[in-house]
Length: 420
Image (cartoon, rainbow, N blue to C red; front, side, top):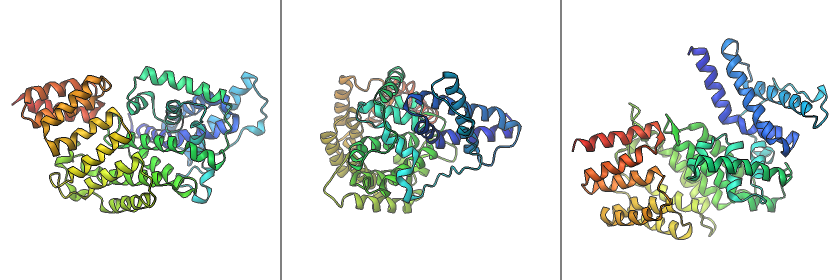
């Protein structure tokens, strides 16, 4: 592949991540919910055309404007053929000079098309899972594989739910204008969940060759900041989520070596942690606790802040982190929360006790296809000086890992244990 092709592919990939949802939102707002599937198709087709044409010519000065113009014109052609509606030549717009900048004027927060469409996807006539899947797929540009990893569901189940969600949204005849403020507040919890899952996929990609997808993290921060700039969205849980994202990003550079290998939390160079981002995280966490409202994001942000405050792995306040996980399991029970709790539990009460708790989780069968179950099991066994059993656990989990860097990391552990 020549450098021009590589450059064009990179531009299109970035556009897909950053502009795809916005373009679909604009088309659906313009032509209506019944044409959601067509809007997705024409945007994808326009991006495919860009990859075919741009390597052999000049990339337009406004790539997003070019793709939107092509998608819009194709949308009109398709609708004419379907005889659904009359469209004149005046409907064909030329957005070559239009602005598709990433920065949004805070004064126009409610006019942001992607944010508006996000609230539309979180329609109360759809069940919460449908809302999340629809928003992640249509607006955030995540694939079925990525969404299935986010929700710990099979790809087939997610694909089926996505099809049903689209039909339900059309049946609901959703109004593609922002609902009244009271309704916005009712939908906010699901919108925050979507932003949280989008950030998580960026911070720890479920597949591919990266251990950090900066574009997804930045988009999650942008959407959350738009909410913070609006009166209806500037709530404790929104601030807590903002804090959580900053605390995570502050530690991102230390997660990989110069050779491209993952570094565990225990071995990370904490001098590389971004203190400015940590201070920003504390600023939003302080805002989040001004009112006596505590969400899942409050707990997670508090846990992350304790990690950021620790001078070393051993000096981490594991007791406080364990108590926070206890609160998480009590207030927001889930198998994943119980699994993550085992890490501080092992530090406070020992690896044997943590292993006993892990066996209880295993018996439920909820996480039997979740790679992290086997990785944590391998870690606990390795620390308990049981190399053979630890290797078996890692081997059971490595085939479930779709991220290449994580797979390399586990393979290294397996190789090291084989030599013992």
